Length: 79
Image (cartoon, rainbow, N blue to C red):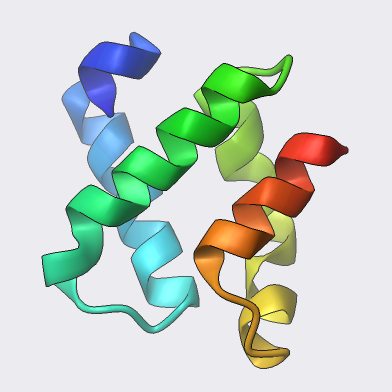
């Protein structure tokens, strides 16, 4: 995530950890989460930090509605 998004490794780890926590996912899914976030940023007009901010604001709502992170990221990418 860090290399693809051109952000520092610490920031990439924080973004991934926040997403994992919001969706109550295990650390073993970190690679999948990073791929989903990177793909969303690449297909949308924003940066990974934009996707991370949007997910931070809406992730708990998506998670409480049992919406998968992939679908949540897709919705964010469409906005």
